[in-house]
Amino acid sequence: MAAVAVHQFAPCITCHAWSPDRSMVAFCPNNSEVHIYKLSEDKWEQAHILQKHDQIVSGIDWSSRANRIVTVSHDRNSYVWNYEGSEWVPTLVILRLNRAALCVQWSPQENKFAVGSGAKTVCICYYEQENNWWVSKLIRKRHNSSVTSVAWHPNNILLATTSTDGKCRVFSTFIKGVDTRDSKAGSSSDSKFGQQILQLDLSFSWAFGVNWSPSGNTLAYVGHSSTIYFVDDVGPSPLAQNVAFRDLPLRDVLFISEKVVIGVGFDCNPMVFAADESGMWSFVRFLGERKTSSTGPKYGSQFSEAFGKLYGQSKHGINNDGVDNSRQRGGVHENCITCIVPLGEAGSSTITRFSTSGLDGKVVIWDLESQQDLLEYL
View 1 (cartoon, rainbow, N blue to C red):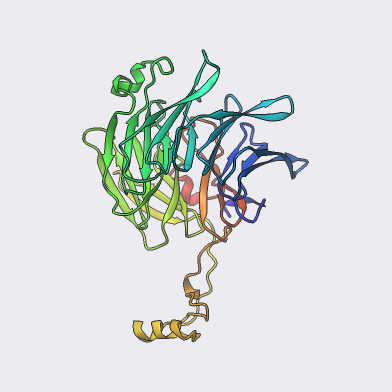
View 2 (cartoon, rainbow, N blue to C red):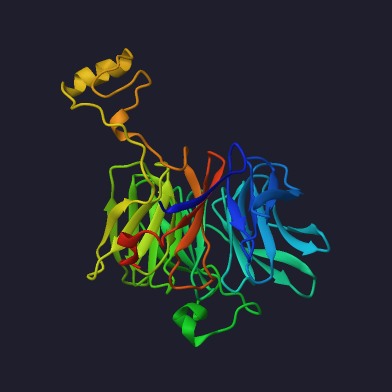
């Protein structure tokens, strides 16, 4: 099985992140705290509790180079935590938001981080050496609704966002004095801060998780209509395609190679998507074992099935709870998966290990080395 470790840390987990050496994990147990557990003699023990926010912590990211933790919350604040001595010391980041902060991610060079919010804005935060504090610049008047996810391009300048207005957008976040004009970044380093490079109107529903491929040539994001979208050649003339599936919608997505994507969400089971030699994407299979208990063949009309659900009659493969036993959801996770985090080296072109967390309070570590049918896609 692809799941190699399952840890029940809390009744519910909002988000999680790993330390650079993977010996500690930080997560929010669906409240205003961040709990940090450390692996000691094959056992996970609570090491720290970060208490500074007033409402639910909605985003956590742990930098791999500087060993800093950034957190955001519905209280509209963000903190950067530095490990000093034996304690985590918080530094307040002024976001200037009038709505909840929803997501956060460090840039590849870790000199900036992006915060998506319910105020229809994106905050690009960076450290100002002269004043010894973290400041933010806002990308405003571009989104028509809450920003649900952010993803940095490998060039450290382009930023992709998704929103509940159904659109995916790509912005330039070039900040003079923080970023350098690099020839590898192409024309993106010549763009002004906040300039919109691309707007994708592919989804007619809420848009959630977004992620770049390791090379930055392909962009993937998911819609609440049980559809995942892939965009190549991000620029004036992008090439887009979508894959619709019959299962429940996704919430987050992760490229594990240039041709393989893992999607997680309401189906409680990671989904594998892959591109063939011609670049056409398709659904491959579920990663975990699905709990199914097939009953006999179904007979009768749709009306009789609906009638049976209404009166709690256990027939046509439907139990008294109105659940179709022939298509039970889930596997290792028992509730919606809300977060997926890579466990490989930063900037690696192929990832074989990653972790997921969900509303069931579990953190699950997945390893694809044992999945021979998937290795051929990597």
